[in-house]
Length: 205
Figure 1 (cartoon, rainbow, N blue to C red):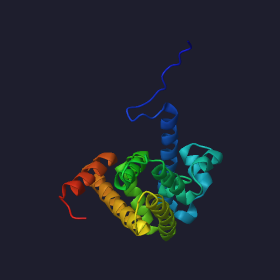
Figure 2 (tube, rainbow, N blue to C red):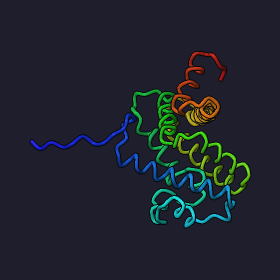
Figure 3 (tube, rainbow, N blue to C red):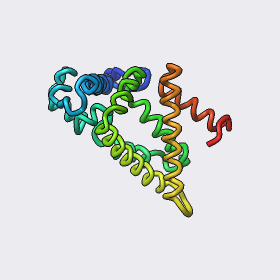
Figure 4 (cartoon, one colour):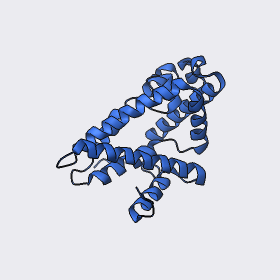
């Protein structure tokens, strides 16, 4: 019988190829943030981001649909892929648990660098064009998750219940990001802490 070597994976279960993709994506995101801090959104081009990150423009567009997406760290198709993750969760999983699992998976897919997140927040606050782009992306992400979650509910008012659940989930995620940045916690751990507070009744939701 032919045997094959085990794939090179890290403790999170990521293959060497996936780790390389993450590093490439993170390098472009960091380059985009640094450049927009230096030149503003209008003064930055895809060519500039690719050159600073050490990749080709073709590689850039394999990861990002636009320079603004690279600045925000929002890869191509993320709203659609996130909704698909929720749809693909086990059918017997509760809507709450399915949504939480997807939120944590989203967090784990991010480059967990509090300094970079702080730099991104700073440029977003001063760049209206990035604020508008972020608002559109988040609206699309929210709507995709609401539609996917509504399909998991039974009974009346499924869309309204899904809307409330998704908005509460994103409020929890903002809390997790804040805890992560203020307490130097890994982002996934911060999510778990927020959920523990909610489930124990230590905070009112």
